[in-house]
Image 1 (cartoon, rainbow, N blue to C red):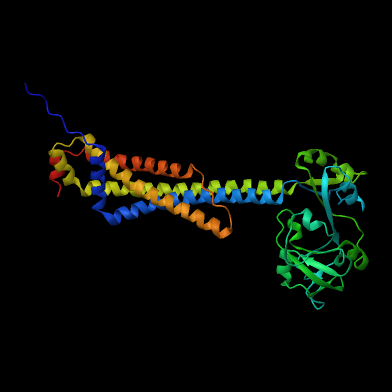
Image 2 (image 1 turned 90 degrees about the vertical axis):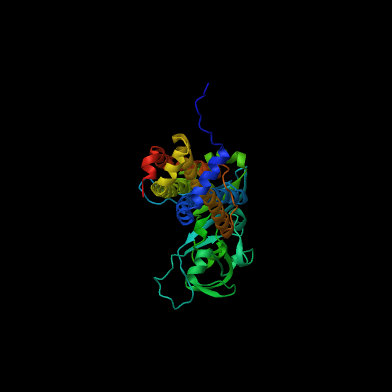
Length: 397
C-alpha cells in the first residue's frame, strides 16, 4: 500500500544555514541594514548605561560628602521683606545636642576686584562672605591651591576664592593681592567646587573678625551649615527654626542640600526617557530598513524560491527561511549595537571619572527588541515568498 509522501522537515541548523547563505549573497546590503539596527540599539544601551552610571556617581558623592548636612537661612517676613537671623543664631544652633558641627557665612556689602583700577560695576557677580575656620570641614570642601583660613589669617585681610570666583577673576596663585571693599586683601587659597554649598563657588570668603574690623560687617549670619547625627536629623530639623530665631521661628528656611542633589538626579531621568524614545525611533527605522531589504530579497530571488518549491519545499519552510534571514540580520545588528553601546558607556564614564554601571536587563532587553523587530520585519516578505507558485516564480525573468 502506497503511503503519501511527506515533506522533509528542516532542522534548526538547516534553517540557520539557509538564512546565512541568503545573507552572504548580499554582504553590502546586509551590513547597511544591520547598521541601522546597531545604531538604534547602541543609542538605547548607551543612554541607559550613562544615566545609571551618572546616578551611581551621584550616590557615591553623597556617600562621601554625607547626607546629614542641614542649611538654615532667613526667610521672608509677613510683609514680604527678607528676614534676618540674630547675631547669636550660630552659637544657639550649636547647643542642640545631636549637632556636632556648625559654621556660618554672612553676606558682606562689598565687592572684590583684581585691582583698584577696575570699574565699580564689573563685579563678576562675586559675593563677599564672612566665615570662620570651621566652614571647610562642615561643608566637606577641599582646597585646590594654598590653604584655608586659620586662626591667624581669619583676623587679617586674607581671602579665599571659590572655584567659580577664581575663574572669573582669573586669579589662582596664593599671595596675589585683590582689591576688596576698598582695601587690599591677600589671596591665601582657592577652593575646589563645593557640591553641597554651591553658593561658595562664586564667593570670596574672608574671616568673620576681618569683615567686622575692615568692612563694617554687622555679624548677622545669612546661612548656617550644621551636621547632626543621621538618626536625629528629623528631630533637629523640627527645632531649628525656634532655636535659630526664637522670636520669629516661622521666618526661618531649613533645607537639606543632599535632597536637592538627589532631586536633580531624578529630574535627569525625564531627559533620559526622552533620549531612550529617540533611540527607539532609530531602532524602528532600522527595522524598516530590514523589512525593505527582505522585500527586495524576495523580488530578486523569485526563481530560487520557485526552484525550491518545485523540489518539494513547503510554504511553511519558505516562510521559515526568510524569517530566519530577518532574525539573523537583526540579531547581528543587535549584538553589534549592544557591544557598541556598552563601549560608549564605559568610555564616557571613564572620561568623567564615574563608576561604569550597566543594568543587567539592558542587554537582554536590547536583544529581545531586535528579535521582535526581526520577526515583524521579516513576516510580510516571508508570507509573500511562500505564496509564490513554482511555475510563476520560475517564469519570472
